[in-house]
Length: 182
Image (tube, rainbow, N blue to C red; front, side, top):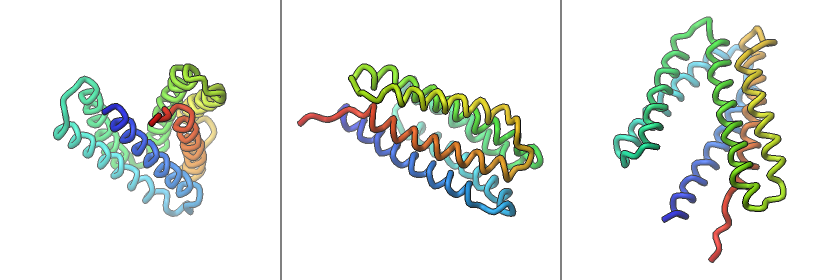
């Protein structure tokens, strides 16, 4: 039972990491004239992700964790709608969205490094902790948005940081994942 749940979690982590890499690369290579389209796609994707999470809550077991995920799904739907109707305030929306997400991912990775990788005796847990702290501070920089005044340059910065977040996710998966003994 435990390894079935862990295998499902590993598959979700691998899929989300690959999607983050594709999104980051796409954001780095996209020409400036498609920034508005990219933002609309992002808004629709966030709404769809939230709707899928709501559907998963309706169809699944009702535990405390699933109720928390349901609340986050409702917030995602609202955020996606806000992205779609934001118009000229898109830099603020993108900085809040990606800044908060990167800060949460950095804290999540730091927790995994400290609680799991360190306790399991993995020798590279300090690297994961360091990368997690960098990811958290990258989220703070994105949230404050101090240097980018055009959407295109900001999209490039977010794309690069998303690639960094995906690489940190891969390292987290390698260092934290338990080895199944037959």
